[in-house]
Length: 168
Image (cartoon, rainbow, N blue to C red; front, side):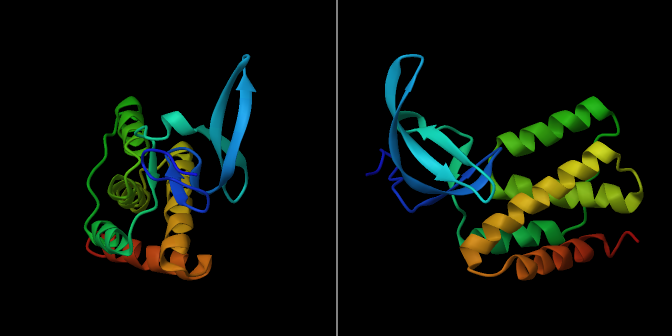
């Protein structure tokens, strides 16, 4: 069973906040007395339900292609862009990167937060966000490249080291 975007059982998708997950089926659930069909999506650590008739929202996308991962790794390898020093402005940049639900925006966020770490300008919250973003990137890469998490982590770390090699 699939929706108008073609999602069906077995498909891998990315949610901007929950990360990569696999559609395991379609369930009928009653919420506040209204029965609807939901995709049951299983991530590594949880299960969530996505309304079938609302699965084309901006914060949901199919997993990226290998080609897009190659291009995203090239983004990560570039010199980091300076992020706002003001916490609120930087928080807005971070929120927009996650909300975009784009692999390229996630790659740029990882690169730029990593650059802040190298410059010694990262706070605990930004450090947590960097680790979460890296985790999302790695989990998707594992699915797309059919590799293990350690290999994916190594590829990401090598790209990050290259990105900051000119600033150390």
